[in-house]
Image (cartoon, rainbow, N blue to C red; front, side, top):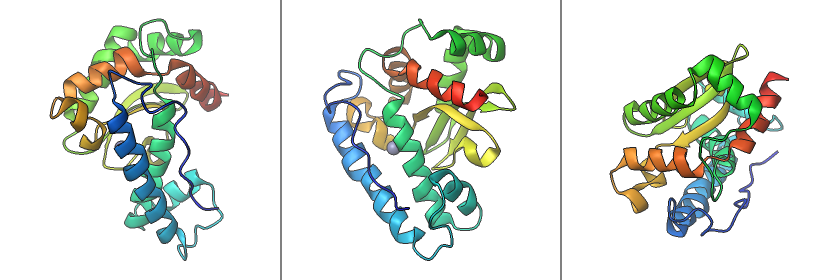
Length: 200
Ligand code: ZN
């Protein structure tokens, strides 16, 4: 199996004004494509050819840094495009994910504060997450391409806090970017779908 760049699930201008077409053109067409191309070069001869993307990510972690970084970022970005939509965010969440946020994360307001704090305190490049671990939701943060899969958890929401995700639209204002992501971009229906799959 080789890695392939998926099309965006919406038009390049669909996430304005919170994420511009220019950001998506660079982020998807250049950065994500580079992870796909480099990942395919490094997959060849790695012994992990033919495995699922998830198994390449967990199988390369800690022993093949080049392959891991590119495969994990391919996995992260494939989901990231789907974690956003036009007219997303807001406080009316699908029922099952709302109930889990209430019971495991202390309710929506605490989730919002803790998720944004995770992204802001991730020094340098990385990701903020909601992951399912042992059947419960957890807020996590990871550096660079690392993700919850390598910590025995399944990500159901992730926010890319690499500068390439926000520098064109927000310059260095990571807090404003994270607030816009939570309040106006999150595709909660996709989060619910991943939550149901992770807890089935
Ligand atoms: Zn990115």
